[in-house]
Image (tube, rainbow, N blue to C red; front, top):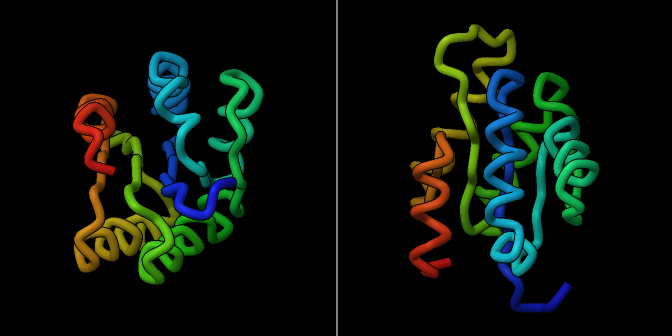
Amino acid sequence: MMDNQKTLALVAHDGKKADMVAFALSNKEVLQKYELVATKTTGQLLKDKCGLEVRQMLSGPLGGDAQIAGQVAEGKIEAVFFFVDPLTANPHDPDIQGLLRICNVHNVPLATNAATAKYIISTQAL
């Protein structure tokens, strides 16, 4: 990792993991320029299916969303791509809402779907 390399967090609800893998495959060249951090299952999928190097946190329900929120609060993450499944209830919703809130509090770019994530990385603003 380069000292000035920026970090992106990648998270996806179970119903959106296929979308995250498709997004990562179609944007692999750009994503490889960043240090990537992800919740456990999403990170493992990105490693296995996309060949990306990903630092894995805990699984979302076990605290991974909170771990990423902490890194956002510390200024260690430049953007969060959290592909949310709006049609499925999640038992760890307070952690999810906490991560989204921390992104907004700290003015960190937050994409909740592939279209927004693509726009954020295509602007080269990160």
